[in-house]
Image (cartoon, rainbow, N blue to C red; front, side):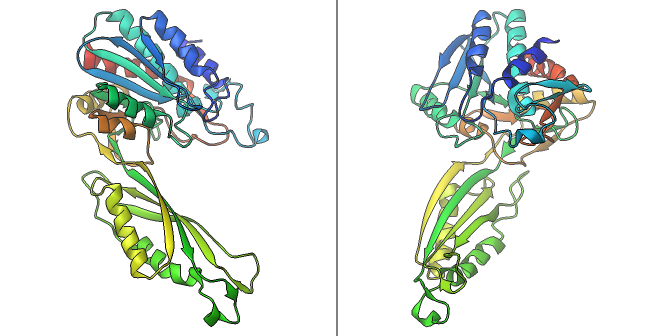
Amino acid sequence: MSDVLDLTRDLVARASVTPDDAGCQALIAQRLQRSGFRCEQLRFGVVDNLWAVHGSDGPTLVLLGHTDVVPPGPREAWASDPFVPEIRDGVLYGRGAADMKGSVAAFVVALERFVATHPDHPGRVALLLTSDEEGDAIDGVRKVAETFRARGERIDWCITGEPSSTTRLGDLLRVGRRGTLSATLTVRGIQGHVAYPEKARNPIHQAMPALAELAARRWDDGYETFPPTSLQVSNVHAGTGANNVIPGEMQVLFNLRYNPSWRAEQLEQQCEDVLRAHGLEYEVRWQRGGEPFYTPEGPLRAAAREVLTRFCGSAPEESTGGGTSDARFIAPLGAQCIEIGPVNASIHKVDEHVAVADLEALPELYLALIEKMLA
C-alpha cells in the first residue's frame, strides 16, 4: 500500500460524523510534528480545528480541508461498512473517501515531502483542518478566521481540497464560489373556519404572490464567470392537518446563491421590500452562510492551470459553480483561493468512493503546486 492510501484508510476508519473529529486531527498532528510543523489545536465548543505551520517570514500558502463527514445513511444500503475502508477493482470505498479524507491524506503526504526536500523554503506552508465543514460551520473555519483576523495572521494563498473534478482528476479548477444566504420566514394570519374566510386571514393566500415574485425575479445577469443569482424556496409549512381550518401561520424556508454583484445585506433589504409591498405581517430570520469570493488571474491561478494541464494533458475548466466551501471564510482575510480535488460523482452518496490511481496521484499534484508557489 502507498503512504497516501494507508493514511486515507486510517482516516476513513474513524467515524468522524460532524462535528466529531474522532481523533483524525491528532493523528495528523503527530505526523506533521515529526516533520517539523508547529501544531496548534483551536477547539471551539465541540469543534476541533488544527493549524499546522512550517517556515517563518514571507508569504503563506495554506492547504485547507475538513476531517468531518456526513452521516452514512442506512448502512444496509452500502455494499460494505462505510467506516471499514475497502478496495474493490481499484476503487477505495468508505464515507469520506472522496469528501474529503483522501485530499486531507494527500495534503499531509505532500507537505511531508515538501519540507523534506525544501527544509529552508521561503515563506510559510500550512495546513488548516476543521471538524465542522459539513455541519453548521459556526465553530470551524469561520471561527478560526475570526481568530486569525484578531491576531493578524497572514494568509496569501489557499488551496482547498474539496472534490472539484467532474469526470477525471484535475479537469476542473474552482476559482471562486457564490455566496449563500438563507431565510426562515414566518407569515402571520388569523386562524378560522374555511367556510367563513371573511372572519380569518389566510397567510398562505397572502404570502404566495410575494413568494412568486421573489422566485420569478431575475436578480442580475451574472458576474464575470459567475452564473446569475438565484432564489429557491426549499420548504413551506402551514396548517393544522385539517382541511376545514384556515391556518394562522405559515413558515417558509428559502435560499439565495449570489454572485459578487451583491452583498448579503443588500439582498435581505430587497427581499423585505417585496414582503412589505405585499402587506404581509411577517418575521424573517436571516442566516448569512458566506459572501462570494473570486480569485482573478495571478500567480496561484496560473500555477494551478499549469500543473493541472501537465497532469491531465489539457487545460482545466475554470469554474465558480457548485455550492460553497470553507474558502469563503479565508478569502476575506485577503487570500487568493482555489479548489482542486478528486472526482465528486459519489460524494454524500451511498458507496462513496475514490479511484486508487487518483488518490495516489494527488500528493504529487499538491506537491507540484506548493513548489510552484514557495520553492
